[in-house]
Length: 232
Image (cartoon, rainbow, N blue to C red; front, side, top):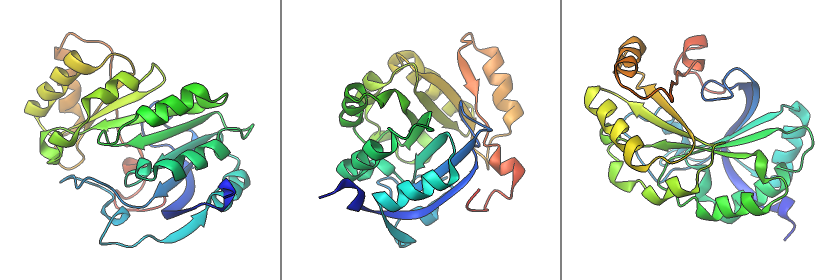
């Protein structure tokens, strides 16, 4: 089959500014794929998975045309969990990555999908340098801590990011423990859970511990717009 004829279920595709991570503030095309293999207690996109249906089915070619129309240099491939659709997502990446105006495709993944097949592809592709993982490692309060695949840390590079969403001091210490025992490469991000931890408290904890390579990560889109607003 022509890769451009492959279909994927989407929740939404839109352009906005990236709200978090190393590319925060840049105009970005968001491609939000449907469904997720986790059910985190504090999930802020419950509309992206069952029992809610996908909003639309688009071919890779149709997604490509919208990406070209907006012309943003950055793409965020997100969900749900976008890597659920292994071969189909690889086909999408193979079509997106060669676009000359694209500088960065960051994939938001939840830590419960094996990254090795995707890492192997980006390492072998001439355009693979554009692909970055933002791995959201789930802690205790998510209810999904036991689903995390620790071997994923072996497939991260300095281009990638590892995000920890933190709800209290116990989770802050839990995240530090994971960082010390498992993180080898990648930018470490600590994010305050929106509903339970004030950012200034997380900052105070960061300044009290010895590591100086952990970055505070705020969801700036929730400060710009209503936290429940979609498509921003």
